[in-house]
Length: 169
Image 1: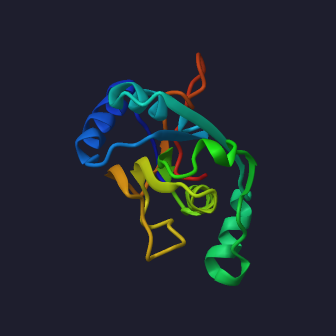
Image 2 (image 1 turned 90 degrees about the horizontal axis):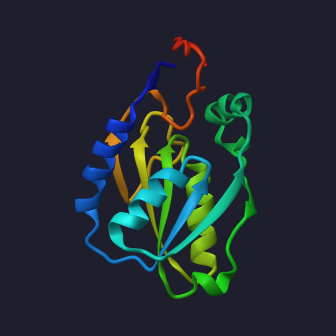
């Protein structure tokens, strides 16, 4: 899979593309750790949202994904390790923020958990990869760009090291 390293300036442009898409006001931002922390923080500041929470997910490893793509019966859901108390999101509009929608499992698991807690979930990512998506009927509610690449965000790049972008994962 092709990899693409993006800059902080590109992240800023992606956020600028997202903000006009929001026609609802949200009560809460729920950031998916680790990739959703920075875009979620920027969006919370831009939108004036004070209630921000973190969720942490343990997702299946990449080698498991290949088997799952070939046979949907093997789709496994991520484990949600950290989630705010239901009372913090019940009857609230919750903007779930991640950096990317790849297979869709992680953000879908969080969306379902928000619904189960009585909140109204809205999903938001910087990049949507429709080719990796395991759920053809679903996509993020808000996204800044469509890609077929594995995106490497500036907060993920190794500091002070040479980053080699190869065609293999």
